[in-house]
Picture (tube, helix red, strand yellow):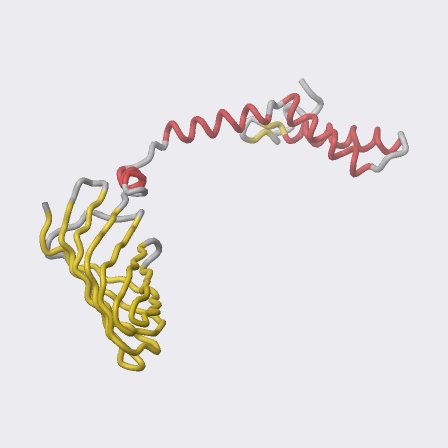
Amino acid sequence: NGLGKGWGFETAGIDFGNVAVAALAGGASSHFAGGTFRDGARTGALANLFNEHNLTENITEKMVAHIASNPPDGQWQEGMDNMFNLEVGLGMSGSAGYVLFGHSHELSGVWNTQGQWCLVKTSCLKIGPTLGAAIGPSGSVNPLSEAMVVGETSKSFGFFADAVKVLGFSGSTTGMSYANGGARWGYLMGAGVQMCTSEAVYCM
């Protein structure tokens, strides 16, 4: 079934001896026909792989066999289950800035697609030019949330921006997906980084 058979170059169902012979024959034919040896050798080798060895079919079969013999483990499945757990929160927040740093406190009701509703308190230390004080309603959204447990705290790092002159807006983002913002009354101007701690104080 080919001049290269039996030369001991067969690996993973492909007889590389036969491929080499096909490449040589293709290169020589191309050279004598006025083309380049390189192009003919490449064409001959590829034709042998795809025609005689059914390369595409072999690769597909091996991929299917690998997936069938290596099913996803529990950790992978848990990660997929938690990939799109949406969390939405509504509450009240107050912030204050002292020239080079500031802080904010928020108390909000948080609902997630795992069926939880929790009362969550969040405190943030703000670092950056910020001055003034403001208070108002806030809302948050996190499409990659985790289950909330009463008494457990979580820490996060992100950025904040405040633009309040009598009435204005404050916004922040922490982690890779969490966003928070809302209307504020007062006077508060600033921007920078923040470090936050959140705790679920009650869940139902």
